[in-house]
Picture 1 (cartoon, rainbow, N blue to C red):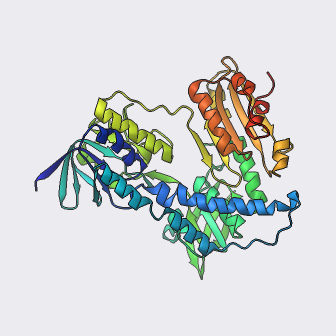
Picture 2 (cartoon, helix red, strand yellow):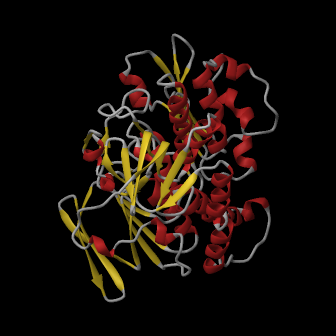
Picture 3 (cartoon, rainbow, N blue to C red):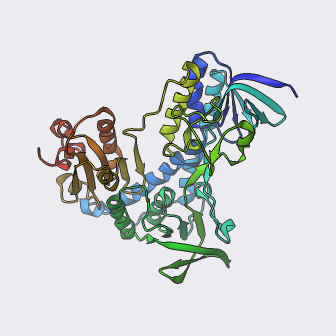
Length: 453
């Protein structure tokens, strides 16, 4: 079989792969993109975008619940779950076709199928062989498999975003982002929600005090969280599913309509036959140099969720894709800078973070100032009847630079970007404190969060 020749072959049509196409097409390089599913990948089609539509409904239910504080009398809200799912699907329906047209305008050949390495410079897809000067692995992530007896009874977030009937009860296995975000929506919609986490803390990568604030709010709305558990098995129990787990040496049982794998996601590289591509990996993690290239085969580049060097965030996938594209055009000159990259957990209210946790900051050995604020009694919080409003800002005492910021509530998912900019561009705590902000806004509270000069 004769090989077709391209300058660049991209495995994956998500945000990372699409990010690559801009620089390389502007340079006139020929590009083939291989994608077995919808263009744009998980986030817009099966992740953050459709999920945020459900979160918005959860936020509306929260606001209705607080209406009496504003002296507004309302009746019991009734959520039409099927119509909400239909709205979600309608809003994302045209994303893949819009991207297909965009790739056509860029003259990127999109090939439907699953690509695999057949040689260090060649990808096989169906009955075609594509030989390339540069190969990009941008295959995204997949649900982390759990070695639990009866794991086949679990569903994933994909099914949660498609089921038009609201389950009366849900058990999430794993206390990560997916479980908490969906858990808050389902709990506010009236479902009984339980979360089982193997580690002592939910969201283990996040600041422990921030997580404690979120857990307290989760408790308040009725989510039952149990940490430090070992799930033994999942089994059918009539129309329900039974989860048997051990907690503090005692075997316990929960039953629910649905059991959801909420253990997070891992790089989707297992089926690529990396060995034939001479791409070295360890435990499913491709070994990369600082330019996002395979250390063992530098003509292979990796970006997005498939890259083990960065958080699995949609904006980072696009950012890394563009860096890979520029390195293909310019040579290995560009490296990613992850300083100031903020993230949010879209519970209601949200948890937002950037930079170091307090524990990580203390481990650096630098002297730090930690400004912790319970802002529920602040005028801005009382105006909106916030149920939780909390912040922690970590400052290097010697340089006055922001090392980390953490919010629960108080529009933290927006304010966190201010602190991200401060970290990235070296804006000091004094400069943030002395800035004049529009008032009355949540941003105007930044100077108070940082204490007095």
